[in-house]
Length: 390
Image (cartoon, rainbow, N blue to C red):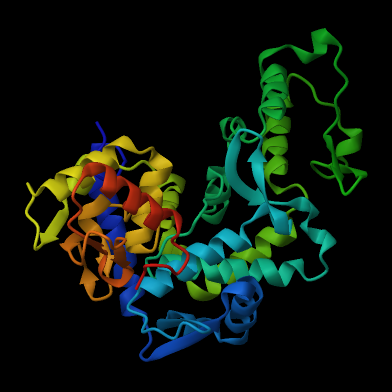
């Protein structure tokens, strides 16, 4: 059975403990004062890059004040959450060629070997390392996650053949075939080398010293599979991975993560994906409405009827992020600490719903019918960008 954290119950207690230890390390190493980061929405990636790389890494542990140019509102945490979310969406976007989807059916991200086409790519990876560490340090979530083998590399964990399966099924199947068949009987001629094409050029790589001279046999094929597995994850991306990890460890020392496994690291960075409406409803508070007010009952009917993506959009509209804390809705944070999802009766029935992302609050006017609520709420969710949000 799974607990509130989406991890098996027997691990939940230790995960909560590990999370507590990590948060303790973060708070006890925090620095006084704050650091201001001013960016424009139109130039989010470049502005953030310039500012984060100009600062000393330890400054990034101070309290963050994020300012969107032309929207000089107070940041109570809502704007920071939005910044982490949108910037992660930009920097990890495969369009920029720094990252790519693991495969056609796997939307997790991995470093793109072709990123070296950009002469400045290593400094960008260092920046992304710093940024991802800031998200962990400040307890904020990012928009898309990396592959589990990528997290394993961050944690210096051994990679196994099984790890390739979701990333590159063909490559995996060919290694499994070698493992399960007698290659000498099949007359298969293999050497300790591997070919890799990047930017249209095929290069041969020795898996060990003098690999092109060493034949793969029944006796040494296990070593070959091991070396191939490691090479599959590092091929063409060693320098980029190093730059990413260097940037990361300037803000959060990698040894702070030593107790976590790759799934827990993903949970810490991305929060929970699937929306649990029962958990959401259980952890919602009301102002000027009661649990049994018809508008409230309509609201939950609406939430249950829309698909997961719309639910995420609704959550984003009200809280500024589509990710939930690892403990689910019970652990939603506002500007001044824990802040439950709140629905408040405000305005006239002609108004659209509004949201206050700093306080996880939805202003829901007293609509006359379920159809009216659906129409207005849908309009509000679809029009989010800076609209109807405070």
